[in-house]
Length: 161
Ligand code: RP5
Image (cartoon, rainbow, N blue to C red; front, side, top):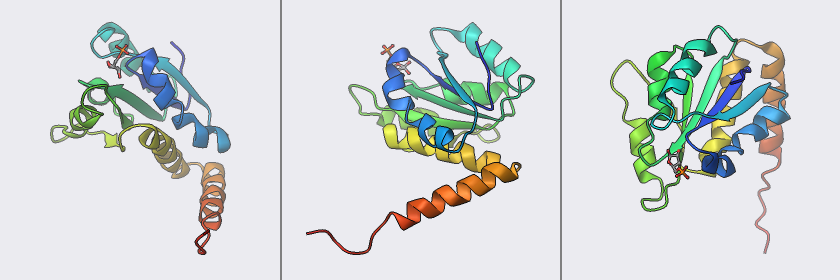
């Protein structure tokens, strides 16, 4: 188990094809990050250890993705005060609506920053993590500002026929 400024965890290796989008903005902004598999149901002891160690290991934001009965983000959030950004991975039969509802319907007092279903949600989880870090890191803030400006500048007004 390894730790970094942003830790990306997911319920299964099969989630990686969705979750790798979370690394795009983090890499672009030179924010240290690492990824691994932690399953709320298949590896509950690993979940406990991960959540218990993350704060003292220096992790500032956790991105957690899971599909179906997606209890991983909420369970991690219950075991640490580090902010958890949740990503609903699209499930085979219910297309991720089950994942979304599993992650977003948290009880009062324990919460996750829940993102859209699928790859767009994973990508935006990276954006959200960067914005959280930018609050207390002026270098990340300036890099994020420039990245956002570039995004804005890339949107042309004219429709291409
Ligand atoms: C969840 O079950 C995982 O997060 C994954 O999205 C889903 C399917 O996992 P696999 O059966 O592909 O390992 O726990």
